[in-house]
Image (tube, rainbow, N blue to C red; front, side):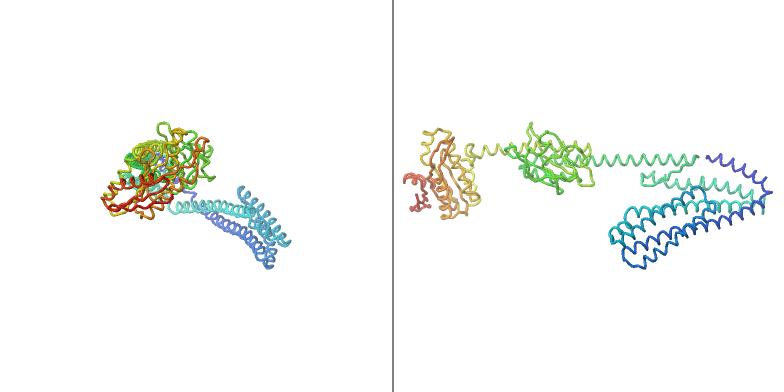
Length: 601
């Protein structure tokens, strides 16, 4: 109601009270009698309601204690509580005689039904306990049905007490207010009229105007400082102050929405900045290992609620291997076949399990956590996979985040493709295309680097030549000759391992450098290479090529000068091995020495 309307009504009520002042005394006395009656009724009903709740709880407690402890005292107490049922019926009868309202009658009926049901359950539980079914008795007394009935009973009692309390309190307040009011009118007719007039004015000016305005002044001040955390209590009054309160509330809601949008914009800008930083680092990576480190560093910063892995496709395009992980992903395996991922099959992002209804990838376990597979493609070829999984309670990714994920995947794929292409080009410039060994250029660079940086470390060199290689080309064709060279190259790599590096010197000649190897160790390894090559016959396209043998020249050097002549001395030892009948190892003389050591044939 508007303030102007309240003011007009106040004047009218004052006039009416003046006219009715003659009967004020009689009404005051009558109201006082009603007040006393309401107080008595309130106390009686409240006491009876308390007896209902207490009796039900005591009977239940005795039954539970009996089935838990087996003490007959509790059984006797429970059976002695049967008298409580009569007391309860008497209490309910007394309540009805007080003239309870229909809602109170309904609550009493519910109390009786719940109490009867509880009595039956408790009696059945005690019978089961006495029959030896202790677990069943306890399950009955502590089960959900018993708890539900007990809770329902206590709730109905509480509801009954609330109903009676509300009714009697209302009656008391009405009687007291009427008594005080008419008593005041009876004592001073004109004074009461004046007091009522002043009270109305006080209510309008202070409670309806001054206090709301003071409260809203503080709220408006905080809102003016953009402090939108302040609470604006809604005032549903249909007057001028209520309209002002509603306007302030709308202003605060709009401010909160602006703050939320600003926070989202700032977060979005931060995400874009991190993505931009990540892309710059990706472009500067020199190896796939550096690329994996960049992805593992920036991915958890951009998506702090998503764990994940970076996978790279092997050269055969049949399997993927994890090269980076962040935030401890649990569902996806470190390595799996390419056919196990639906994202790779479809060539597009794929969501597995969780709250989604799509089919799960085979490389994921059966957990409820959702996983997202984003293929890494470059120029139409799939070269890897970005995998993300949610970290509860976070969701997998919003639609905007999906766009960022795809943008990152696209750039990671391009960067990875560039690195792989650079690696292939590097291999072409440093490795022999036929055998996969390092080429002559790499050999010269390694010798020069050893002379510059590791001149004090001994370096052993083996020059290896395939015996009678022309025979393979003449009898079986050049393809067979190529296979012989690949066969020898594989044995060289497998036998030398991490002890040195193998090179194709040219034609059917190979070179092995062994940094730090002693003369005896180098000779032993040379003999092992020779014996391994000689040990098994070689076949090509179903034709037996026969056994392959090699001649080996071995030399060692320490210092800049000897390294410079290392290849010459090893080659001279190789020529001597061939002149002595091939299939042997000859150790070349050290500088200024004329003796040579020969391996066994």
